[in-house]
Length: 280
Length: 280
Image 1 (tube, rainbow over the protein chains, first blue to last red):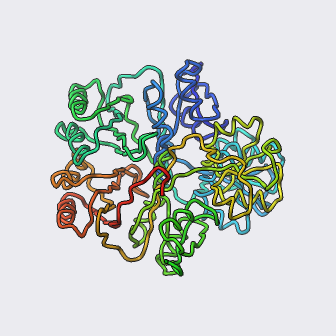
Image 2 (cartoon, rainbow over the protein chains, first blue to last red):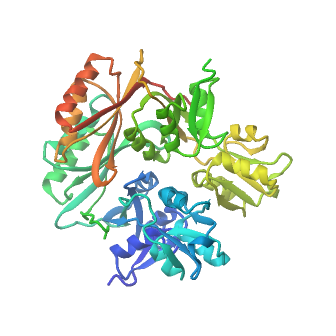
Image 3 (spheres, one colour):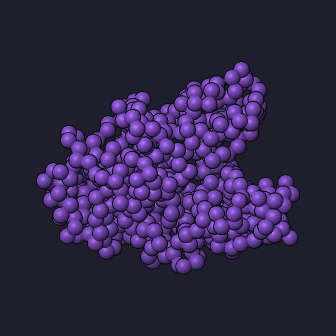
């Protein structure tokens, strides 16, 4: 199933994005990329079949870079997946907690485990480029005084020991990922559609634009105003609504919206994935 | 002017937040704090008179943590300031560009200078906890092979040399800061008001809520739906509109909104600061 499908993700083997890619496409081949830009460019050029990138974290908010990249590339959202982010404290096999004097992770990983780290007593927190990469670093350097904060998956990949599971302070830590591809899909069943639009800034613009959905009882799932790149404080709106553009009333709502906005782009319709407690 | 006023900010001396604090309150005493939490808690307890924290970057989007903290503390937004973020490449005096083999900064600082860094050739990028702190690190360690990415202000504070100014890839890089205090202000002249609200999720909820403003020709400046902490994918809306709660029509709009929403909180009215090209 999905074997041979090349899915680009940002980060190293063991990254949360890789986990999301495999949850969406079991058996596919995850392809690590240095940057989000490389994921988008690689999917657009055909180097990869699809890409999986994070767009929203329940604690930290939207990952705007990926919304910008969606606008800069001719790609479509074809799926979503919500992953429960559960961090582990990871060290070399045989190392005990009392030996740890340094902890490496991405600054977000360190921040999300602040209280757990405080309970360890005097440990130095060292910022690294990513979570999985910090596990690899501790392993490659052979450091027995150091631990990394990353996923269980990363511990397994690098043959390292999980010292503490569920090391994050706030258990309601979820990240929503999207899959992007060169061709759109037409989801059957419960669907969501993501769009971006902009208009001439005047009182009531957004209200009039949203009437296109409200008057048709179309439920909004997310809305965000976002400064336009290169035009400080002119805003573009990102909206997700329940329904697929294969539905007549959604197409009519978009037609109505186009009358009021100066720019409308459909980023894709995709099956609605309802998150469950463990995020799978 | 403002002397003796204690303004808390997150980061070390030389941080962009300190610069914003001094732009808002020339002559005040900036007080560095380890975390945003410490800024909010310190202002609430009376340890500091005010706090200055970033809420939005024109490239990276909202800093959600600070919106969450606004909801968790009984504090008010009393001012805003937009700062043009212009990074410098900073090293020890007398060091030349060709000697640099390592560059330290916050991951965001490194990311915002990616193309400029690529032009330097083979340099190792090392993530640090903050921009100003990376200047201090390079100075304290006496490293002549290393540079840091931070503000000109940070270079001055630590007596270091600016090798390259305007090192950022995208010049339209602005961060909006807010000042928070225990007591609200009643701005005269052009003002903005920030609110948060939530309601029972059903089609048209947001549309109905926004009617309170649209029907009174009140201009929206910003809108964002944000997952509620502890309740994955239930949303709270953050809205800023033109006007002050000292105005009758704004008070009426809020009264109208309260009829439709289950939760409304005014985060503060404050003078509207129009950003200029240099962000001052």
